Image 1 (cartoon, rainbow, N blue to C red):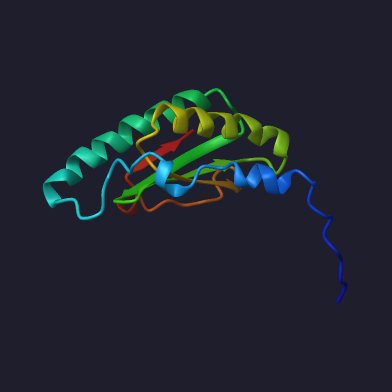
Image 2: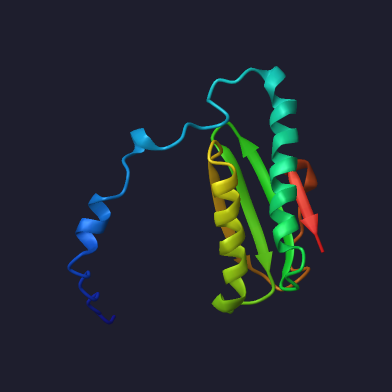
Length: 134
């Protein structure tokens, strides 16, 4: 077993961390816990609309072959499937995620990127609120 020390933090890292906003200043969640069942169809429509915007930003990226999402009272969990392990190919995904968060500050997002060869994943559409496949 090899022990490897981590590089020390930059001297200004602690000051930058302290400058981050605390949770009380963050925007509220668009779907508060305890919502009633009659709100669920509206949540599904909102998820489809928001995810449609996300796919629109990525549709010309040949490396992105699928995007799926689930929504719950805490927000939208997004999985983007890319046919490349190269971080350079993932930069457009990160930009699209940022634009989506800035465009919908009332919504909490959980973003995930899976480096899976195209077609290497099967989706159970019954478990998803949104699915896009190239």
